[in-house]
Length: 535
Image 1 (cartoon, helix red, strand yellow):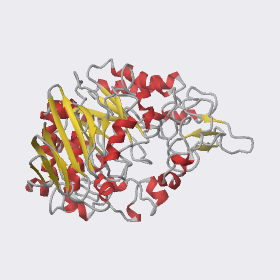
Image 2: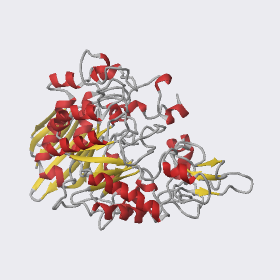
Image 3: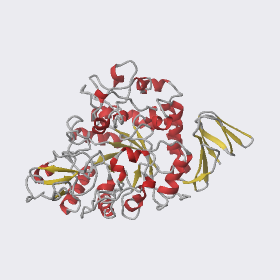
Image 4: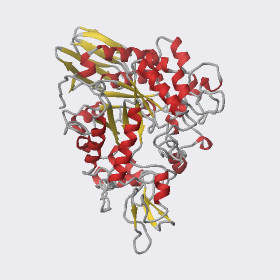
């Protein structure tokens, strides 16, 4: 059982980090793509929500093969989003409101349009000849090993100029940087310094588990049959254990390199995305000297809305690192929205409130994705609207990530709900129009008002912000855990079912959602009800 006491905390421990996917937040120039000016126009909204920091998905120049996660210039702003001067103004505005700015950094790979790659592919004998991972073909011309791309197919592409294969863990347009080259490591660490010097407060590191590959290019072993799920069988790369193309033991030192940079800037923070081999998280994150923290896909890929799902993260995934301060997140720009995954369908505002209350009472730094506070369900897009290369590859069996990336609905009765005066890069579904910010501002029972209140509760309560967590047994479908800090204790009880549940309980009800009543030591929880009690 995970039971870690709280203590003196850095600003990010227990903080609420609000992720913005800038293409879909707010557009001011009518091109259908959100921009920095639009983001600045909505800072009152972010501040009122109660967030402590803003995590901004990539805004660097990119040919958009993977919509910003294929960077062609690490040290500039893409013109579709704005300028470096506008970025500087954003930093000033955020800091003036007491908000931190966390930037997405994609250091594992670049775009194939990046000057580093363009120079390196010209020959096998130039200054950047081994800044990326190049390898000879086998004698019969086939790929160097069995590594598979996360987006499907071999993780190697042939280039006729070099007459060699290059490694790409994702799209072929995203060549993998070679972290075994000390000049590459220095260059990407200088990227971090560039943005820290401009006022950024920290970074979310994309696929932080994949910086360092096995230099011997050893084949990945298969995933044991007994560990394979339906999702694994549906996607060939999941049939491998990715322990040589990523998730290597050597990857630890790259996290330490990042931490050394961060330690030069007081109060800065870096957390990583660890999308594979979650039990290796303690190797890469925590004290002393590794990445500050990180998150896994334990919740993000879960379709099981059961108490065991939540217990397992703390009692299994984090068991090897009881002192590691975790991040908790149910939603982001890569996964199907929470209410759709855990609700089995379209929008469900009561379920949305329950999920948010669980998220905001779990131990860890909270990562909340734009639209989560509105209870937005996943958008079901038509074939002609798909932009994501994953959806383009697998449609209609899998529609990719566009369904969680559609624009934020701001206003009632306006074209595209006030997101843009032009044509949005992704359409806005009807189910989102009724959940606009303006409509929810008018409704005191809305998910938005509930989210603000739940965040305020967490921020005012030391036990919920910093406390240890201890899980307890409960009736079928009821999630129960205690948060404790110094002399304060909170009992959090959640009915994950659509049926009434009765639970023995004592104390004072501080906050609740759904129908819940306490009488003579018994708490009655209605469908999708949740209660936070002082005990």
